[in-house]
Length: 285
Image (cartoon, rainbow, N blue to C red):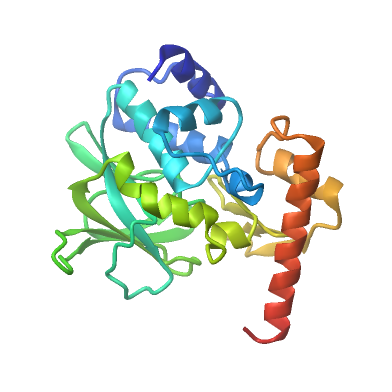
């Protein structure tokens, strides 16, 4: 990673001097990434999906942008490696079916080894764990949330791997293979996710931000707060000014890289997605 970009990236995270690789440093970096860099599909919604080259993703994040898993975990892996961490990228798959063993390739998962331990590290799920989880089978209670790590058996000629479970979450299972993956392994799936009419990233505007106590979510015009202690609350954003204020104030996603026409188009996309959701809801879909 170019030193200047790394410095800007670390300033964005609020960790200008992360020190030598350590478990404590890794945990601090993941917490900062989740709290300060939102999971978003702004570029996809505007018809300008950014590529997934990690260096370019790092530049965009350093400048105030975000992205989804291929961007966020791709850039985070590059940053961690530049700081001396032992990082491995893995082909993963996010599943709504809690019993599925498939690895669809729609998620880039990371593992990091430091201090003689291995960890599941993820800055690209939106509602994932606030801190890395041990890469060991077990159940982990974190801030009122409950997560499970378990081994994934080989399937259809693919090697073994791991399953991360988030019971009660919208996507309760993430599978990933042990084998290392390269950026090129995700290119075809990224093209589909960012351009196909059937893709959820094309159909619905989404922003997510994780902190120590819960998850902020904006889908269409509905702003939600998931808190395992206080429960989930939600409200509908009334108009474009409230919508833009939520993006900047709740999610920390600067909009100064967008033109006035872009901002209007983003609100229009959120409104269309909201209306489509209401139609499906009234039809019982």
